[in-house]
Length: 298
Image (cartoon, rainbow, N blue to C red; front, side, top):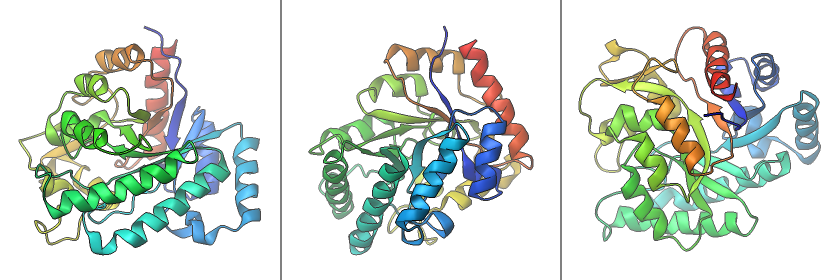
């Protein structure tokens, strides 16, 4: 097996800001980068036309490209119809920014897809995702849902019900291992027609979990849903009480030999983007992760 996929890293994982994070991404050997574009300096509202052109030029000058932007608006995703209009509008602006910067993919969490297809939460999510999907499709682009909150087969049934594939999948094997206990290899096969981006991450589930305790669910939790920061805090160590732990590549429950073989078998040629949300030495961990993937490319 010899992987040919390009390797990406999430700039924000370095914790040093966008400009310095881009330099570090180049230093650790990445081909491309994913950047959060929700708030702060990367909020679409804070970047005018000339700033966007400058950023794209700077990324290019480093010999990098953007694998995707992250447009995760936290909370309950699109479960709450009362706030969806604003979230959908902001998501569209993030996708506009992505296209200007040279990528047609924005990754996001939409909230746990409910089992009850006739309920208000399912209807709210379906309506929002269908609108986002049509908008993305009109520009040959994608909103990519991150795997983990529900089994792959259930996510596929939701995607199949949408009118376009403009909402597709950002496949994260560790989230499946850590939360639902779903098999990432089978998940790749199940979702093969929707996968447009992937995260490379590892972890372990320590005990059976209710995904609602991890990601939140409208009407179930009191914390207003989960942010990436909160999820990272939960995954930081076996002592956190969260029931799962994120680990360096090769040290958790993801069988990467089988996983990368499945990635090849479905013909996925996109980015393998390293996500490292915990740890006190992110640069060291990310460099090792790049080397871990490169061993499969050698």
